[in-house]
Image (cartoon, rainbow, N blue to C red; front, side, top):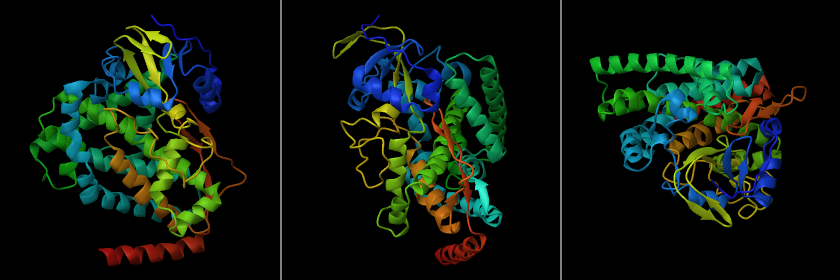
Length: 414
């Protein structure tokens, strides 16, 4: 039971552009029951920051939830000690130390390979030809799944996130998700067998992969399957969409791009502002496990709630002119990675991939980079939001010259 006001939303419009309806919710009914989602929706940044931490009221454990039912119960669907123990087991694979010692350099090598293939083409769909491929290659490394291609990684990830946000209950969407889960489970099990037969050096690339780290920590078979799939479902789409969407945002704001290229502003600022402005993971669901009074709204156990990160990150109480993209703003209040105990474990790796490698290397290598004026970009989604297509062109001769300079610098660094 609850006393939250009812607020109807247009689900089709929400998918195409969620921000107008989210702004209305935030202004008129910041804690509201949305019948189209059959849940309580939170849209103000401060409410989410407070109540996401109250796992006694809003629990991540959702035995009947889509993620648990389709992908298995991973650490994101546990609270308290059960969550923390699994998070600690994975930590060596995604810690700042692992990023510094292993992943940043490995991501850079992968980006060089992808860009070497792109340079002569002079044009590409950034989403599929660079962002998707590089994110997939990074995930192959960090998970240890060298038996899954980058394109398979993306397809499986997309099928899973479509499945876990399938609140309309479309049977084809669920079937695609279950097929992806089965394929990934088989690939993970093959790598577990290989690592068991020949344990990798704990300080090698394979040895710090998620699969090897969890196996070495004594995680159960089901925990390994569920948590590796969790890493894939978030670790592919969020960096992919931040790379492609961030590049589009910068190309449509050339003055801000100029500040990055001349070093006035760091690439990490562009990364954080894009995540604030268009959060790739737009919401997080919870099971209502306890009673609470939030303003004049009373909530009792039963049903579900949705913390709308996409709305919180455009809350005018914390961000001036929140609908604008501005890499010079203070983004410290954004909660694109979450706000409580479930703060994204892969945040350091995602920052390294996007801000340290993918965006600066792309703009450096592809001289004269510009949007294709005849093929406008498209965006979609609300639970998970990102670009669908971003068509780019560049000047081959300028790209080749820049590539040579990059190669020289990398050789000197080695």
